[in-house]
Image 1 (cartoon, rainbow over the protein chains, first blue to last red):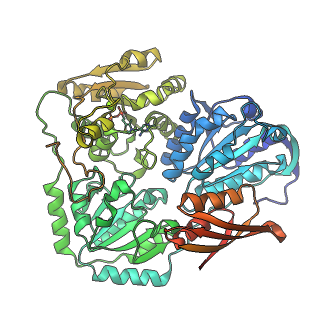
Image 2 (image 1 turned 180 degrees about the vertical axis):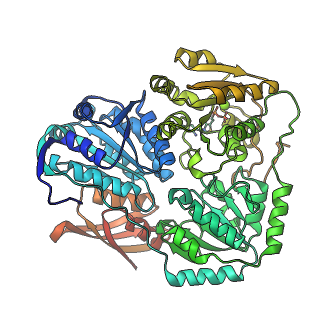
Length: 560
Length: 76
Ligand SMILES: Cc1ncc(C[n+]2csc(CCOP(=O)(O)OP(=O)(O)O)c2C)c(N)n1
Ligand SMILES: [Mg+2]
């Protein structure tokens, strides 16, 4: 435990120690919801400078903390009471776990003596969350509270980041204890990868004729975008990225082929299938990215760079494992490579499969709307999306210039993510333009957070793509379940404009293509929170698509 | 395939749950477990597991648990 030793001990309650330690960590914002077991902490907050954002559902707290963390690169903190408060946090904790987001989740717990007696609002949140936390603590003594907070923060942000849970029994929060003030732990810097492995990777690179970068979310989490871009520029190696890797490479870089995988670009998927060396950087061979794994990049050797050694070789064995610091590995491997014919081939793929926006008709074409909105909002804008077809359209058509400007529930795919994450992002960067792209299904999962936007005047811009159905599920039923539609109809949706207005949020709707540019202007000019309801064709599908269980080389581009 | 693992970990709250949970979730069946807490709150565990997945990968997955100090693998 880090402690200063020389400082005199002070007497405080466990809850006060908690708040003091959070302040010492430099945390400025908490997202939470009070209740019985966490009341001592809420009492301590009265005397603190920490800004507490009262959400309207604990899931919103965890997801807002996630958005806050992704944008700021700092730990997101959420707070809930025991029992239902704690279980409501779980989806957000799992989301942070699967997307490697640094998070501290603090739950109140029933008093120590009642734990294990099925007391009122007692659940074993420590046990329930074990599979989805990086680590967790139950604090058993008030004098340990501050040191536990510092240890938890250090674990959450070190190496591969992730969520850490602290469960704080009520009696411990109330107990007064003398302890010395502790300090945040110094950041642990990942080590350089093994020199022999680097030399071997170097040799493979030199002999490769068709090397390809496969870029994942680990790059953004390691804040290694600059190192990656420098590496790509020096070597000239073309790149593809995962959903979470979007933005790590400049989308306009000539060698960048876009997203690979199920809804990836054909250029990216074809390049992967024909490369002879796959340089994997902070990616993990997720099934949505690889398609049928044993046909993925069939002719490629693999060099895998990751800060987490347990990711290397998990699903595809690597000829060379480079565990440790990503920037150091990339810097060590950077050298110009004689791969002009391959670069030319990839540039031709990029041109051949460039997105088209000339869909016929007067209905609003969501991909074109998203492309136009992203260009109008500018490179600095942050987009937060929900889960479904609209999420894939954002990934395909939004011009994403930084991984920290694209918030998406990649690993968990949790509907309901978009709005709370956007609120967290906007609070982390008050001056930024934050746009939430959501669906008519997803927004209803955390609709209550409109009240949070209203209460704090958080000026997020919500674009609600309403296809009157659970579009992504409908698309799968159409294509893979013989059009046997089952429980996907949402044609009785509420009047979303009236609903937003009832929350005190400015709102308007559009349903023809001619209205799109005016709507974009109105959204971008708005000073407070605003919602634009966009009616789109329920039959629209996301193309292209790699059918489940198929190789990435077998993409469909229509239902025919 | 039967695998034997020798694990040294700190005897902190939840340590055994985390260890066993990780092994089971990652696709292994626990056949035998012997655990003993010794000096300095260090716990040594002998685990016999059955599974078809790569045990070396499991070794690394266990090694990244915060309380785990060392994991070694002996086939058989
Ligand atoms: C919490 C949760 N429940 C269910 C799903 C399964 N699911 C994935 S996409 C989707 C449809 C989403 O509908 P909507 O938000 O309207 O987006 P659309 O696909 O129509 O753009 C569903 C139900 C999920 N991802 N998350
Ligand atoms: Mg929908």
